[in-house]
Image (cartoon, rainbow, N blue to C red; front, side):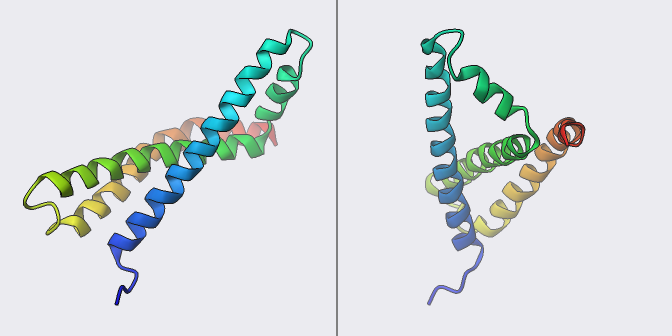
Length: 119
């Protein structure tokens, strides 16, 4: 019986971050394609939306998803291609979480003042 240990959480977060990044990529492609409608098109309206604080919070989540998904993908590669990776998968996952937080602190330092200024 699977009891919700680190491996399950790593799997769930990896899938959720992957789906979220795919949806963001789809939104980004649709958004950029609006430029083709001309200078009076809806692209400028979307730019105004993107500078509001809820979208800045979404930007933080996208950055966290990219960082976590990439680092966890490297953890999966280590587990697949080394003889010791599976034995240390728990420690590797905590390392992924720690690195995600460590990379996220400078991002928060940059983006949170912009969110507060937009409110």
